[in-house]
Amino acid sequence: MCLPAHLCASGKRVVVIGGGDTGSDCVGTANRQGSLSVHQIEIMDKLPEERPLNQSWPEFPRLFKHTSSHEEGVTQDYCVLTKSFQVNADGKLEGLNCAKVQWDFSSGKPVMKEIDNSDFFIQADMVILAMGFTGVEDSKMLKDLGLPLSSRSIVETDTEYKTSIEGVFACGDMRRGQSLIVHALTEGKYTAQAVDHWLMNK
Ligand SMILES: Cc1cc2nc3c(=O)[nH]c(=O)nc-3n(C[C@H](O)[C@H](O)[C@H](O)COP(=O)(O)OP(=O)(O)OC[C@H]3O[C@@H](n4cnc5c(N)ncnc54)[C@H](O)[C@@H]3O)c2cc1C
Image (cartoon, rainbow, N blue to C red; front, side, top):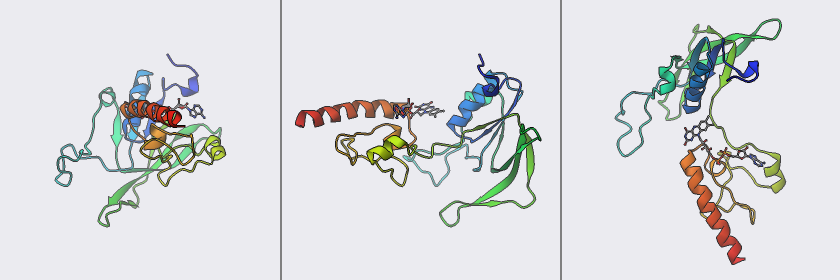
């Protein structure tokens, strides 16, 4: 059920950059569209399969997830930095120039170091960027409203979902950052209630 050929993974060697949930959705979709191969690369190290000692209960553990999409077929690689895209003389993608990296957490802040002479090439006809939600788009609408984005690139509100501008409310990913549908649904309902209170008090 592919639409434009350039957006369809059918018959292509696909590389997904990003090892999170979105990357996993991309792996599944590429497989179901009949890709030749799917390679998923992640810049961070592979997460542990069991709860590590430094993530004690009730903290939610950050563990390696093997989803049903992965079971359909994928090569997964970790600690991989994409250095450049390689294209032929016609501008057609040939693949990715990559290198392996290592992480140092000793300072409390992750520091990435490229490993010398670790460069390698991955052939690709299609690359899907699934590198994460980096924040709300700083759109014309927000600029026109004069609504600033916080340091986390989200729109801040008070507990009543009110932004810094009278009569403008925010909820969902716009307010929380990357999140889940259950949160968006709940915040939608609470925001409707908050707008109702605000209107009734006016
Ligand atoms: C690939 C992917 C997979 C995900 N998988 C899951 C999952 O399995 N489970 C889960 O719980 N969550 C998942 N999420 C997260 C979930 O989709 C979001 O948390 C949720 O959709 C946020 O809802 P929202 O209403 O805040 O924003 P959105 O769903 O992003 O809705 C915002 C809407 O506003 C519209 N819009 C933007 N600008 C304007 C404008 N100027 N005027 C009018 N409309 C505008 C957009 O077109 C969009 O329709 C996933 C997210 C992604 C990207």
